[in-house]
Amino acid sequence: MNWDDSMPMVSIKDVHKAFGDLEVLKGVSMDIKKGEVVCIIGPSGSGKSTLIRCINALNDIQQGSILVEGQEVNDPNLDKLELRKKVGMVFQQYNLFPHKTALENVMMAPIRVLKQSKAEVEKTARALIKKVRLEGKEDSYPGELSGGQQQRVAIARSLAMNPDVMLFDEVTAALDPETVNEVLQTIKDLAEEGMTCILVTHEMNFAREVADHIYFTDRGVIVEHGSPTNFFDEAKDPRTKEFLSQIL
Amino acid sequence: MESFFEWFKLLYDNTGINLPFLYDSYDRDRMWNGFLMTIKLSVVALFFSIIIGIIGAWLQNSPLKWTRRIVNGYIQIFRNTPPLVQLYFFYFAIGALLPKVSNGYGGEVPILGGFAWAAISLSFFAGAFNVEIFRSGMEAVPKSTTEAAEALGFSRLQIYKDITLPLAFRVVLPALNNNLVNLVKTTTLAYAIAVPEMLYESNQIWSDNVNVTEMMIFLLLAYFFLVGILVWGMNRWERSLKIPGFGT
Ligand SMILES: Nc1ncnc2c1ncn2[C@@H]1O[C@H](COP(=O)(O)OP(=O)(O)O)[C@@H](O)[C@H]1O
Ligand SMILES: [Mg+2]
Image (tube, rainbow over all chains, first blue to last red):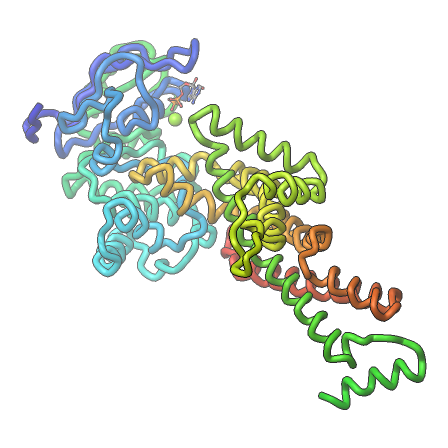
């Protein structure tokens, strides 16, 4: 199938996923267009992480379809490398490589996976470190950086692969309150540059500000979705209202 | 130098403390060659036992059940039998099965000599422990770290080589240190198949000179010195691998 960017960049249709007997996703569908920023919110355990991990095949799915730029993820012959070149992912716990400096963390994948030349990669890596406002921290090891700084290195590391879509899974949930904003600002910059983003977040103000579309999930289904204004001000479903009343 | 050696001759004449491997050039050569042989055997076996450890730990994570079983079987056999019996097994049982080659004087010699068998046997012996050591180190590497690499497009082998192994290595250095010290001490078993290492040559010397006490004291000190150098080197290595903000 030929994909062009008038079609959804990520198209999720009726996805079902279970861990053993535990059904975690029970028919989830959503489309994300190029340049769109989508926020997924919902109570803990509702399957947000699982959904986002399915998009880059860290989890497999039992039923349904996930197309990333027209490439079917639910395919036993999936070329995972091709998929992962398109999809960047940032985790809650940063997951930097502790034995590599910030700069090396950013440089590693383009050198090893894309086989780009070291000199070329170093130039883009330094630019990315600057972009996430960490100039001067190039040679620090992850253990020497604050949580917010580590998370920004993780974002730069992901961007170094030049992905078309970025997945963020509660990337500020483990941070000290004073460093949350620096990370959110970095993501906001990215969104404004037109990066396609799928975010799981509990930062409601942030979601309201940057999201084009918000999905509310509960117990493996999408309960409700809409534009931020629709969603925050005119939520209809009692589960959404309940959740919003607790969190706002 | 000559007067230094002469002094030990005087020592013998005046006190009866007999150290012929110092004043007698023939015994000196024997001792020196034995010392070099011990070092050679140690280095070769250290090297291959580490290689076996690294490959074995990788194979232990293989998706193929039989690969894992074979590796586990190997570990069980080599951990639960005496290394001397292993050495005899290699030298006498396997060695006898191999074809012989002409020695150039019309006779025939085994294709592998005592040194080769000692090196092979000791490598497998220490390697079995090294597999276990490396595996425990790999278990200490968080799944989330390797998952981040996976999401960046790293292959399984790249993850092992670039992430898991370097991190595991740092965790297991103290245990590895222990095992390698053991290995150096176990090289004395090669005596049993007449590999002319330090213990074997010492035996030759005390048989000729009837100075068992002196030789025993010397041997003890010589191994103490040898193992001391290894421990010192490993500790330096351990320090040089230390990463700021990582580990204890
Ligand atoms: N690898 C796994 N094995 C078994 N159960 C899992 C696994 N990952 C997640 N789950 C379960 O799936 C459910 C949804 O988890 P998750 O997607 O992490 O929710 P959320 O991110 O919305 O908090 C939870 O009940 C969780 O315990
Ligand atoms: Mg989650």
